[in-house]
Image (cartoon, rainbow, N blue to C red):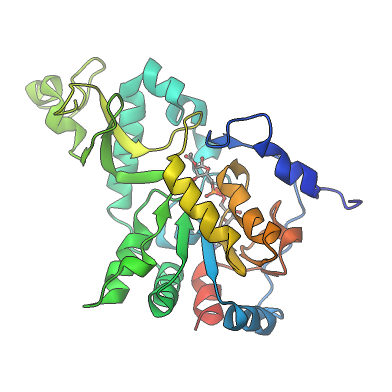
Length: 305
Ligand code: OAD
């Protein structure tokens, strides 16, 4: 393609070749121009028609959908990866080298997320899939806000149809790094005898970290770290759902982390369409039938009403 910044389909497809398809990695392309959000959205009627006509709909969400809940994104100005080095905090190598630092980072995020609430974007999406009862949400977010929105919007009914497939895991759970056994998360300090002994609440290096009740291995938050494999069964479910969908809603993701960013392409390759909801252009924008420039919490209630 001749437009600067647009990676052609070959480049979009390339991350799947030469790398095991379940490994998490980031594929950056040239920066695209970032047009200002346009309100009201001139393409909204067309987007609403696409939603009304679609028999099967899948949504892929990223950090942007939680931005209006106060959760920092990763790559925007002020995003987590602008201020922290992912290779020190969110890779399997970092965990093996220095589990305490990685633990403290996730413990900080757990504490922060406990103060956040689902926003109108999560809620609109939850209502939409509860109404439909089929297909659903695939999220890269580990914050649990889709699940909370589903439970709250379902009221006395079953919330399952709006529970997301969490392909990068869930920060609220622990998992054994050795045997994979999942466990309810406990505060780090509860395992840290040294910290309890000092009474400072601080966790000195070398203090005790949470261990698996079954095998004694080191526990860690149940999230996928860079360089790790995704859960193959979850990814298959997400890709199958996307491949048979007529419509993929791509919401609040920069679409640079694979294999998640390849999920909308499964819809495209199956003959379906993409609607993107994002204040900025991304690598996927030109593949979208409609790109609604705006915040998810404002756009989704209008799009999915
Ligand atoms: P990014 O931080 O890369 O991208 C966030 C996207 O949200 C950007 O495209 C923003 O323009 C957009 N955005 C910001 N505010 C928004 C709003 N109110 N409404 C809609 N969109 C908004 O986050 P992700 O794409 O989710 O992985 O990042 C993907 C993965 O990278 C994460 O799952 C995480 C991270 O490293 C792992 O940790 C494995």
